[in-house]
Image 1 (cartoon, rainbow, N blue to C red):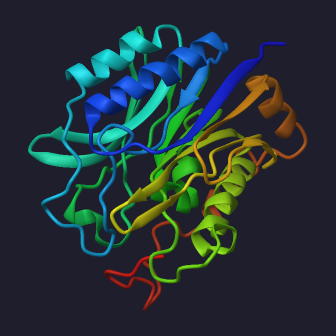
Image 2: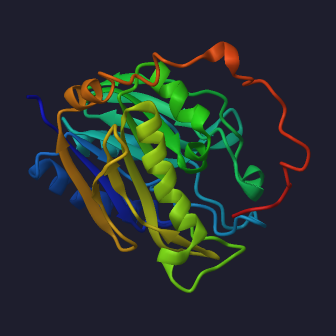
Length: 290
C-alpha cells in the first residue's frame, strides 16, 4: 500500500507578499515535518484576491508575479521534496492572470490560468483557455482555480487527461448578493461543498480543495478546505477558520476501486452530448454574481 498524505489549507493571505512568504515558511516546514506529500494552498495565496467582485477597482489589485520570479523560487526552496500548489496573480505578455502552479524543489511541475470568470473578474484578470493534467511525485494531477470547479467540463477534461488527483485552489467568498446571517446557511457555502463532492464523485478522482478565510474588502471568504475521495466522501475538512484538512490514502488503489464496477469515464456516451450547444436565452446576466 502506497499511502499519500494530502493536505488542503484554509487560511487568510493578503496583499503583503513578503509577509505571506514568511508565513508560508512555517506552514511548509510543518507540512514537511508531518510527512505531507502534497500541500494545496488557497487561490491568490501570494498577494491576495480582488476586494470586490461586482466593481473591482484599479487601485487595489493584487501585485503581479512572474513564473520565474524570486517568490516562486523561494517556495521551491521551501518545498524540497514536498509537492506544493499555490495561487497568485501572474503577469505574462502584458496581461494579468489568476494563476495556480504546482511546484517542488525540483522546479515547476504544472501551471494553470483560471478559465471561468465570475461577475466583474474580467476587469482584473485575463482568462485562461485550457485544462491539462501533468505528472508529479504524487501522481498525475490537475489544477482548478475557484470558479472553474462550478463547470463539470473542467474537472472532466482533467480526468480524461489522466489526472487522478485534482487540486482546487480557491478564494471563494460567501454570497455577495444574498447574504446569510450564518455561514452554514449561505448559498455559496452550500455550493462550495456540493461542487467539491460532485466533481470528485462524477470523475472518480481525489480532490483537494483549499480556500481563503477572513475578509478582504467586501468579500468574506468561506474556508471549508477538504480532501474528498473518489466516491465523493469527505475524508477530512475544516470549517470557516484557518486550519489544515489532512488525509492519508492510496490514491491509485482508491481510484481503481471506485472505477472497478462503474467507470464513469469509460461509460460516457460522447455522441449523445451537445457540448458545443449555445447557452439558452437569459442564461447569461452580465455583472450578476452569487
